[in-house]
Amino acid sequence: MVHERAGQPAQPQDLVDVPRLVTAYYTRTPDPADPAQRVAFGTSGHRGSSFATAFNEGHIAATTQAICDYRAQQGTTGPLFLGVDTHALSEPARATALEVLAGNGVTVLIDSQDGYTPTPAVSHAILTRNRGRAPGSPGLADGIVVTPSHNPPGDGGFKYNPPHGGPADSRATGWIQDRANELIEKGPREVKRLPYRRALAADTTERFDFLGSYVSDLPSVLDLDAVRAAGVRIGADPLGGASVGYWGRIAEQHRLDLTVVNPEADPTWRFMTLDWDGKIRMDCSSPYAMASLIEQRSAYQIATGNDADADRHGIVTPDAGLMNPNHYLAVAISYLYRHREGWPQAAGVGKTLVSSSMIDRVAADLGRKLVEVPVGFKWFVDGLLTGGLGFGGEESAGASFLRRDGSVWTTDKDGLLLALLASEIVAVTGRSPSEHYTALTERFGDPAYARVDAPATREQKAVLAALSPEQVPAGELAGEPITAVLTSAPGNGEAIGGLKVCTENAWFAARPSGTEDVYKIYAESFLGADHLARVQDEARALVGGVLEAADQ
Image (cartoon, rainbow, N blue to C red):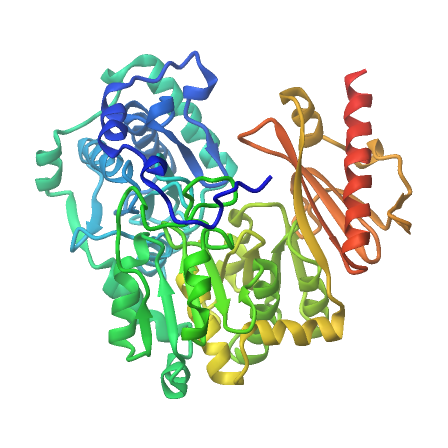
């Protein structure tokens, strides 16, 4: 249910107490016997709040030591790029990480201006440093980004990007997570560490211009000359995140008609409007969190938002307001594969299996191979590195794509890139991305898409994650024959951690939540909203029946 104040400005009672939050980071010690207080890497690293003793100095010291141990095991000997976003817990965690990295003799590259660092700028830096070096060769760089992404102001986050520049795979995160928890159990004596001032002054701590490196290289991936020549009016809202210093530089250096809508960074995010549940959350795909920018849509041809580490994008147009992320992904794919002559002819289209099937129809029309993978951007890394994929995107408003010459740009999500692409689309075609999506629906149909949650115990979630197609007895979904029952992704054969059921005109996917006692049902129908509701009802009944049978 949507909160009564969703979309309204935050009030004093909504704000996190930053001094108490930071004090809790340093004074609360995790109990390794409590599962909620252990290090747990999800699809985007370890996240939690210091108030819940889920993101504290002990977690970050142990996790950083575990990353140092993992680097040694893998033979990674080059520099480590250390990035940080604007969350209140990010700077304390960055300081802890630097102390441990210096204690282990790791060469660390921190921002030359002590600025905030978007996730894509770290990925770009890693790949630029490693260009021309073979995998496994000496001197490869990697990175850490201190960010909980779009999570509320009271949360912290910590993620590791190996030498391929993208999110670490499950083998790496599992090893790091287990080693970190082992170190927490053994106590701080197992962690090598220098005091902060010594770590900052260490010969191994160096400076790097993340901002200049990233912004100067943008013309290699986008047609900014066209954007400038067309005079596209752009409004960019960093939503108080790490892109706050990047948008102004982009406007200045590339001479764009770009206004930074809100240049403020405040760890309470007091300038935000509340999200659907009444919480402050920097979700640039949410019409509630983006309400302030949506109100200003008539002032710009393209208005954009980014989350706290700028790996996600939100696109606002005068004619449609905030675009559904699935809609924009379909438009971006349709445009890019028609306007990037330097891309390999064999470069496929990457999508997660819970993204819209409009992408399937666009890819087929383009004559490009569709590569459908489980949820998680890590599944696009190899394809973007090799050029096997031209584009990889998630329904949660995260994507990246190749440079104009067909080489890799980033292997992590890049919200700045996708935001700027919207302006290129306007400049080159004379139409907004939302107008392009309307044209796609006229050709391929107008799908209805939604996600709902249903309750599930921890045991039921485990059953759902381990389902086999044989456990789904139904032969029909919402009046159509079932054409496929999937528990592994067609694009790479990897387990999806749930179930996807398809018909000719509809599908649903059910996955357990990693943080709550619910499972998520994603569903879509090309036969309209009423048919979508029927798909959702039958999906709940079908999955509920499977879970009940497993309980007996």
